[in-house]
Image (cartoon, rainbow, N blue to C red; front, side, top):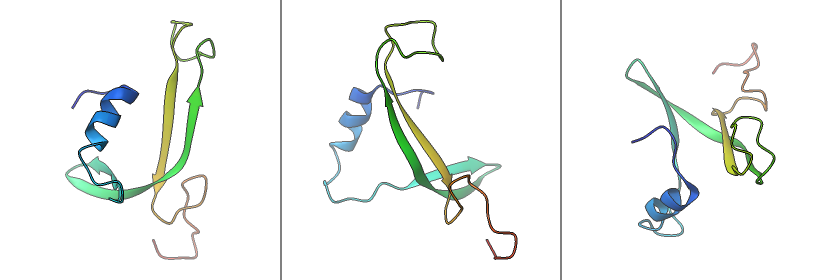
Length: 81
């Protein structure tokens, strides 16, 4: 799979699944899969681009974090992970 998908490409992939199906996110590192959960989803309109030189760019940003972590992706050091 390529590094970035367009919204249309993602919709096309998701439309092949039942509407009630769960979406599960993983982070792969050294052949180890760690479950992730959505921290936020943000939409950036055209002209708001600070990431891309293209001022006509619009994008959706999905931020993931480790399962059961706080909003910063951190774990309470007193609790087991």
